[in-house]
Length: 459
Image (tube, rainbow, N blue to C red; front, side):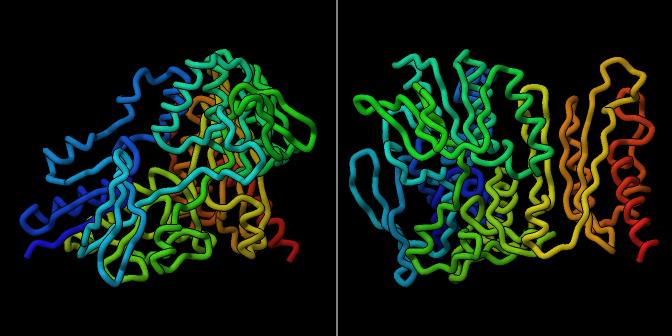
């Protein structure tokens, strides 16, 4: 007897799951229907700022696979512009609204996969619905921004929030010759790294002509005839012709919560290691699903395409009759602003304190290649280390010339719960054009080890 899998959400976590399930069960065994409320499937949302800034030429370049390709190659019935508005777990059905004509329908399921992603945070500030105020999450958002910019030719852009999207959108607007102001209420941009590391981002933004206002809290928007003209803050108005919200995202878990599924402490859908929710035969993956943090040992909501693809694959294997588990995350991420690269993994200081760790920090500065070679760039690395054990809890990097990719080494070290004693002796590659004889990774580990040894001697 043929079973039916219904997938809610047509991006990374949804379509990777559908594809994996199809690889294990053919159309005669498993019918697959996927509902996507937007116009696109399987696209790179991370590429949106580069499309807006002109580095990527065409929106189609960001689309990995179209609905037609899913239908023709994999017999997956993808229905775009269809929004699931209700899940009935008892009746094993979903209620669907066709966004083109407003009609409704009901689709039954044997297996359900929820991949509703995340949604940009939009506080209930006065004027937030003004024309020209945009969140950025899906390809439809960049289409709307491009259309608005073509129609109104804005000169002044204000970015509210200095996270990953905010920073990348600020650079994209500057690349289009707009006057850009970044408003952030934290001491420095990118609060996922500690302020002493975030200061380098401020400097990079200012060097490309962006005005960075930190310690400033946005409170609303002023408009004229419905179109935004200023961002109201606790330090006065900031004039704007276009505003981009970079306040982060939150799990889009409302549909699952309304159906009675368990929601984790992070606000995302609670899942087990197989991506199974609290209901039998119902899976979830991606930005809407809670992740297990391998360092803090807590449930977290981290919106990254890397996680979404991996989790979707795990869910798809299990829905297709196989067995696979997702072991968790360590919170690895990176961003590039002009020539400055910033990366982090594990816990920053605030996160380590919140998780109950006693820790110390160590900072070391070195170069990306042998210092005697022309073009050697500075790199700064900060480690968060557990007192007593010397276990690595987190790492942050600021630098140039692929400095940020060194975070991958620290991510692997965190994964295996290595101490600075271990890290100091890791056999890393050396060649003068690629690294000094003592790689910056080893230098900062040695410096942390020396501090640890001193503390042990004082004990």
